[in-house]
Amino acid sequence: MTIKQLEARLDMTRANIRFYEAEGLLHPVRLPNGYRDYSEQDCDTLKKIKLLRQLRIPVDEIRALQNGECALGDALQRRVDELAREQSDLQQASALCRAVLSDGATWQSLDADRYLSGAAALAPGRSLDVGLSRDVPRACPHPWRRFLARGLDFSLCALVWQAALILIFRVNPALRSPLGQLFDSFAALLLQLFVEPLFLRLWGFTPGKFLFGLRVTDRGRKLSYFDALCRTGSVLASGEGLLIPIYSLVRNYKCYKQCKAGVILPWEEDFEYELTDTAPWRIPSFAAACLCAFGLLFTLIRLGQLPLHRGALTAADFAENVNDYADYLGAQLVLVLDAGGRWQERPGSSVFHTGALESYPDFTLTEAGGELTGVSFTVRRYDEPLITPVYINIMQLAALSYVCAQPGIGVFSDIPQTLTERIAADPFSSFCFEMAGVELRCDVQFSGYMPRLDPEQAFLWAEEEQSGQTFCLTFSMTKTG
Image (cartoon, rainbow, N blue to C red; front, side, top):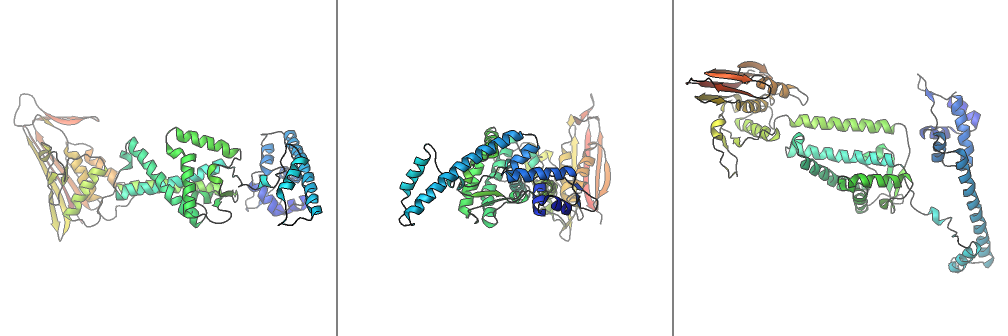
């Protein structure tokens, strides 16, 4: 049946039916035309809801009854006990009102102590606090919504910090040590500490709270930045345990139990934390936001794999690209490349690396009109007992720094991975291929050596009882366009 027919049968408003459906108490079938089709079971459920709501049984308790989490008899008995207490309180309040009326008291002459003493005499051992019991901040007993909202906010702050690491500080997240990852978590937490209060000050909610229909106010007004800062600090310290391992889990569990029981948490005592609605679109929106966050993180990681300088490179740009790639990819080069293509000691280094200058081949850089058009280097070895392919890293760094800087290489291009794989495929064989308008050529010649190639190790060793071994490798990159 349609919602209009349901309204007529039950004498309920459309808003009532939509509310109970949003609360998950009704489950109509969605027709191909988009309309809802309510069953007789839905109609029967609404009748039960209508009866129980007339008895003032809360919606949450009705949901628990429907899910079999409590018995109807227990719920009704609790309601009978509550009504008895309310009836007694109302009788006492009525008697007290008549006493004040008969005395003709005004606001100025009202002797509160006298009447409070009279109320205590009417109900020894009880306090007539019907009004006072309601004059407290309302709890927001939705722990999972609150936890997921806060988790999304933290993830967004972590994403901003990751962007700073990758794009500004040029730190590769994949190479972070456990201690570095813990530092990143604290940095994101510190960012959240100062950013979240700004959102609460301007709008009363954060991105996560908005998606779950949560709002924080100061008696209907937006919080000041200082108040919001104090509140966020209390949440992160008492609720999240400052992300300290184990302790954070304990704090989250305790806050979950308190929130589920309707207890007002410490940071809620001075402010109102409310759930505006539970519209069905909020959960899919949260899932979509999580997917977008993961997509942005993936994009940042791919962006970090592109060269520092792109487009028409100068020799200095190329050298900076090589040095940046070496640090970002963890190549651990002990030297740096200068604008002339020569390897130098790192500035400020007090350690001289013996033999490093010989093992790193200098580059020959060719420029035309201020633009770098060719890059090459040559490695020659004579009468050495063992040749290891240490130059592979140099070739890969050079190729990434030059080829990936060419126009048309996008964030999601697979060229960086393809380049490194093709160069390292066979470290003692020649190759020639073109990619992104650049021809890459490697000519390898050796004599007197025996190659050993396997996934774990690759090297050339000198044949026994022979001399005069030679090894020569020439690598070049030339712009073809």
